[in-house]
Length: 203
Image (cartoon, rainbow, N blue to C red; front, side, top):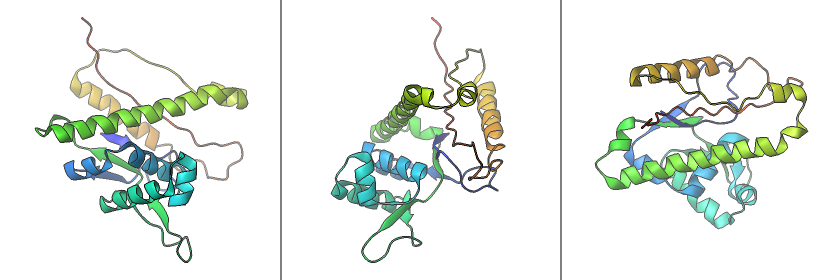
């Protein structure tokens, strides 16, 4: 189950993004609101320094520096040797996204389950913020982009196996569009796609 992906995958030839499959230890290391925001910012906007991320996120550089080092210790971020000179340290996301095994959601350790819940709720919050930004600024975009957007929901009856098939086919379709539009194409933009698939009780 993918947790998060960047707004844009700059590897034009990759059919699928490079995902880090995390274990219980890494999950506990990621389960902090600021760490999740830092990782999301690096994946969305590219490499940055701790002070640059502090300005973007409204945090102190001491806090961002500490949590970047923590993220690095769990393999989520790494130094960017192509940037920075002297004492300036640049960071980049080590992978395009993260995924986890569903077993973590049913782990016997309540700390692991709690970490999973925190991560999922923070990801959902980030999705809601992105959607809110679009709704608040869509009047600034052209009619063509408005018509090319979607705010839809669907209700269908499925088995768990068919639900998994649906998710995998949607992922395959989205990945088939990667690399089709060069980064400097006039009139193009990075398109953010959220996918939420979950069962609901009907009683």
